[in-house]
Amino acid sequence: MKHCLFDYVFSLMIIIPLILISQQSEITIDAGDHQFLNWEKSQSLKLDGTVSQNDIKMQWSCPANADVKFKDRSDPETSVTFPRPGYYLLQFSSQNQDGRIIEDVVIINVYKPNTYKQRLADLANLMTIEEKISQLANEADAIPRLNVPKYNYWSEALHGILDVGVTSFPQVISLGSSWDPDLVFRVATAISDEARVKNNIAGKGLSYWSPTVNIARDPRWGRNEESYSEDPYLLSCMGVAFVKGMQGDHPYYLKTVSTPKHFIANNEESRRHSGSSDVDMRSLWEYYLPAFERTIVEGKAYSIMGAYNELNQVPCCGNEYLLNDILRRKWGFEGYVVSDCGAIHDMVQNHKFFDTGAEAAARGILSSCDLNCGSYYNQYLQEALDLEYLVEGDLDKALIRVLSARFRLGEFDPAELVPYRSISNEKLDSQEHRELALEAAHKSIVLLKNNGILPLDKNKIKSIAVMGPNAAECELGIYSGWPNIRVSPLEGIEKKAN
Figure 1 (cartoon, rainbow, N blue to C red):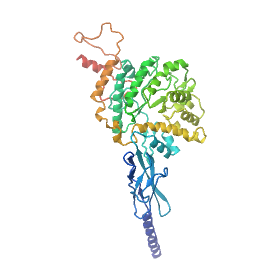
Figure 2 (figure 1 turned 135 degrees about the vertical axis):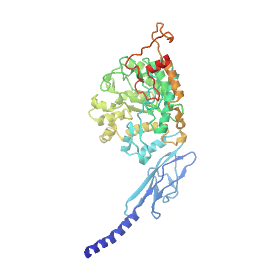
Figure 3 (figure 1 turned 90 degrees about the horizontal axis):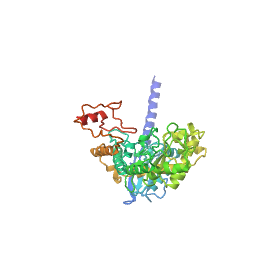
Figure 4 (figure 1 turned 90 degrees about the vertical axis):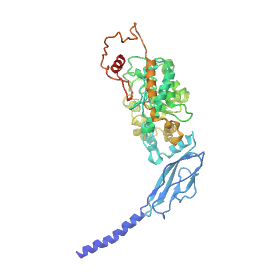
């Protein structure tokens, strides 16, 4: 018993000092908060690193740029000078007593107002291949080490934001019946006001997959209500007005990103996911393309959505003639292309155009379809690289185009520089916007035949019958939000009659 007790005490005598040594050797470091630096005002700033033990040797470094100068690399709170605007990752590191390297990083976003390309290039160079691929999906992952937040590119604003507590304007086919592009511009301006409010208060994405500028060519098409007209000229005028209202008029910042869709000839009702829209060149250029061309060239839309279907036997989201030759080379488009949801998947599973996901993903990237709504890029781009179907530089082109939009939306700038950050929350479903919606509804009415019935004289009417399954419902149409107040036909007629 004594022997056992002695062993126990002796063991404690050994273990306790070891624990103390272990605790003493445990070092924690913090590189401090991420910072902005306005290059036009200063090229230097003070860092705010901290270390848990004063006698530990520390080291600041900037692995990606040797021209960054530290006043004292071993001082946690040293000052640092930058050679140019850029996106800098600084490392704060030390070696533990057991030889283990411990480090923390901090991002210094050195900006020159109204410019972003050098910062974006730096950010892209800091990313791993896995991180680059993660940014090419509609739900882009956060990259905490680079201070890149997550971002959702999928929002809808066909005739109002697809969200709660917003203003709902007349459906698009009704707005087209107004023949009033200025009205559409004012409607889109109101929608983008509310989009900015939703972003300011809830972080909602600012990339909107609207307008629909496919031709309303056949009354049997199930999505006619999304289009302004069957006439290419009117459709073009309305589409341009909508894009301009959504994106704003600032020379640098985008209010939102507007995405005309679905490029191109997406009017096939039953076989969009597997069939081909076979179109002769005259019809393509005179009928189907004009609205897209004008929203890109005149409206300056910063994004466009590729369609599910094939154009002349080649899937639109892998169609180099459509996306590279026409869109980029002929029209000079510099924004990003997003696939319709599942369109890259369709190239394998439905169109049977490719045998593997890696082939389809590579073809999408090489055809300038930069962003995939779906999972195929995340699943197969690494395999496509391994098989040498494409190279990292091809990913970089897509990445730069996609992230350019986020920079121009002001996401990587101080809030006070972005004018749209100051839009009042009172704009959301405001009385001003409700009155605009009413004006738009009035101007959208088309009276086909009257025979002297209208206007009604309620003094001569004894009773009114409101019939049909939707008499007491308030159906706002496809891609509609949920405004705070909705009035059914029955409610409206009762109020007017009384």
